[in-house]
Image (cartoon, rainbow, N blue to C red; front, top):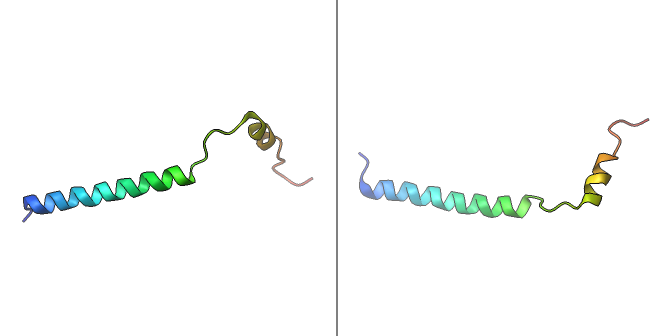
Length: 49
């Protein structure tokens, strides 16, 4: 049976996961690529000649 305490515990677990996920997303997401980086990436050949 689902009690009020179990529901609260599930929400706390979900909240902890979201906090961790947000921190890892921020840590491993690239932001603010300059136009020089974008141009360099566009000029990378996809196949060897």
